[in-house]
Length: 282
Ligand SMILES: Cc1cc2nc3c(=O)[nH]c(=O)nc-3n(C[C@H](O)[C@H](O)[C@H](O)COP(=O)(O)OP(=O)(O)OC[C@H]3O[C@@H](n4cnc5c(N)ncnc54)[C@H](O)[C@@H]3O)c2cc1C
Ligand code: FES
Image 1 (tube, rainbow, N blue to C red):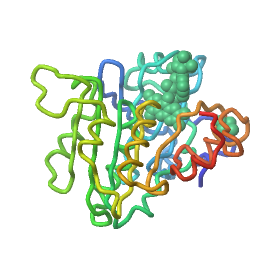
Image 2: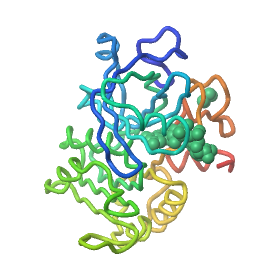
Image 3: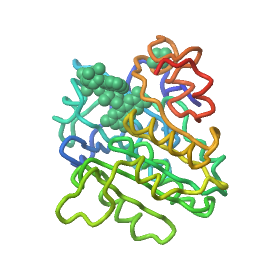
């Protein structure tokens, strides 16, 4: 249930998780593969694509991250962390076998049930691909439920693209249209060049029977929303996530509210139609 913390009587109390694997994705992004120490809680950790969790380092602090793997591939709980400040830098220092705190799953999720039978256009930039990867993996594992799947994913440079193994899988499949782009030309790069919103305009996916889901830096999201509207996507065909800073994660502290909505329980996933009903505080 949105806003609940699985297996926890006290929702502020983190569960202890052990790092089983670390993948260095880029110069400033690492993926952490975690398993909850309590096997019963690990088995009962029911999450949905788009939900988040609070990861904590004792004596350092707590920060919010999207679950980056699909619940259909849940032998570990995966988080991709970009180095930004105190907590994320400390996380980057950890090694396999180290223990951290985890509170979650928190928040709502991508409306993947409503997307069944539709063409799905995924638009990700930078670390914003993390929660989208969960949705992509989910749709690929239930492929028959969805129509065409287009993935537009951009980063600054080829070295800034995450999830090499997933990209290879997506590239090989003939039921996925993968479009990769980087901001400028790089030696050896033979794919697209250009910012994500510009490439979206060039690719021009049809809004007919389609849903677009986007996550990335705020400026990218702003321009992507404009492009999607220009392409004819209606407000309820556009889904995005908000990165509003969180504290409690369970609708109690008021840290994350936008007007009457708490991003931690009513979000982080919103349709553009829902966003347009919120006060302009972003
Ligand atoms: C719903 C949600 C999902 C997220 N998912 C991911 C994810 O999957 N992977 C990931 O790497 N990051 C994600 N983030 C961002 C992540 O929570 C922050 O990068 C992290 O909190 C930074 O913590 P820190 O202690 O390292 O940085 P701090 O020391 O707290 O801050 C470093 C700098 O970054 C700024 N900052 C930190 N967090 C934010 C924020 N959320 N918005 C704007 N400015 C901020 C601070 O003001 C400061 O300037 C998500 C955030 C939210 C709210
Ligand atoms: S983070 Fe406390 S109310 Fe949302």
